[in-house]
Length: 281
Ligand code: C2E
Ligand code: MG
Ligand code: MG
Ligand code: MG
Image (tube, rainbow, N blue to C red; front, side, top):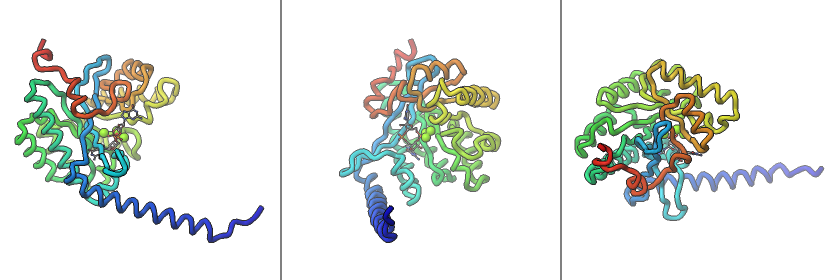
């Protein structure tokens, strides 16, 4: 077997790395302009109650329509925004847009459910409480119409500061969900330390259902534990009828996933909302 010249792979790797670093820097620069240029857009994915079809609310998911690269997933650009600190500006914008859509739908006589908004670690400071309070009053939105989702990594920071902010948010009537439950290092200790209102079981636990026996056992145990702690349970990434039925059987409270509805534009989501009179019938 011929020996590969030692310098070749190194050269190749360096070039590729260069390209990647440059792409990343370019994307980061573009992201700075994206808010001003109106390239970001809120999508809405319905959340339904187990055993029902009508959405009770939606999760807000950000999309970036990049002028050259097309739609970029938040899985790509949110980490960039977090690394550069831009997430605070973007997060404020998301909150304002969400309130503005709620106001728009209320004005049309529709009854939108609460919107669940993803919050990054950098956003969880005292100012978030003020930002939300001001937006709620500016758009005349009851605070129970806003829910916040956060992953375990937010709690890697200053615990005292974080729990103070979470307490203030809850005191305002804002519901808090622990997102991607089960994927972190110490999900259980977080549940003990902070008082969440709901937990969202990560999609990776749902994928193998109902064939995966260990997976099934875990779901059952998570639901029982959550309910004992007074938490509602939302399953993420529900894609099949079998998964839906199994989760319902296990007592999971809410479902979210492509089977129930994909993330959609505001106007598509609006079309699913009941109007006020119908909701009261
Ligand atoms: P997440 O909060 O866990 O959101 C759920 C993700 O699962 C979304 O990906 C959604 O499109 C996807 N999903 C929902 N149902 C299914 C399904 O049945 N099958 C599959 N395969 N996927 C499903 P998306 O929209 O790409 O968002 C990825 C992540 O980006 C989110 O995960 C959230 O952590 C973050 N993100 C999105 N929008 C925002 C935002 O406004 N602010 C912050 N800080 N993070 C955001
Ligand atoms: Mg989420
Ligand atoms: Mg999640
Ligand atoms: Mg996730």
